[in-house]
Length: 114
Image (tube, rainbow, N blue to C red; front, side):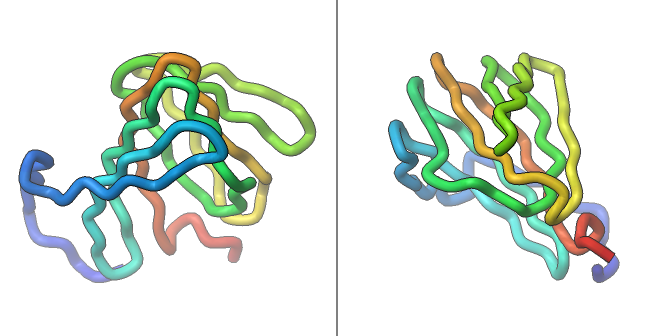
């Protein structure tokens, strides 16, 4: 990862990109640095991810709630002010949100399987 100088992010100026889920949609606003990605993500009501993810993340729930489901059927309900963290390749996980949610998601090289 490179050195990142003091920076502010005005999310109102970051492009919103829509991605369809198996059901519902996800809207991403993304900032990319070398080896580090920061996203503000909103899931619509009824959103279910269209894939099982193996990537590592730090996911912080800003508003609403969602379920992070693991491939072994374990489910975790995350509500506002809760966070989960996982490194690359340590779980297959996907998200579902009944009523919609707003998340801050950080991932990057520091979560790679060493």
